[in-house]
Image (tube, rainbow, N blue to C red; front, side, top):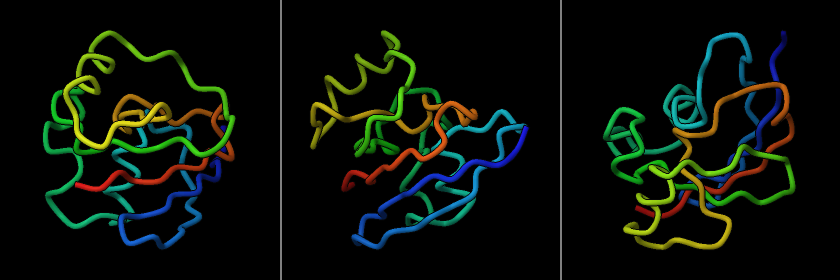
Length: 108
């Protein structure tokens, strides 16, 4: 396994190209926190349990992602600023299959 590249646009509109390890069982929300791409305490409030939508992001390209779980769909149905391409970062596991993923963080 190796690192992959993910493009993340933060809440200020700044683009970041980050390397993401595929051998640590991490998710996108953890990657955002690791690289401090959002103010502390504003992403991953529920700890990655799909219960707060603080890690909501918009998928900007056609990288194939797993289907939304029932929990993710339910949380997004109650969240603000939801778009058709909304996903919860905590539910996107970092694997080689998502290399090249481009995301934009939803506003708080």
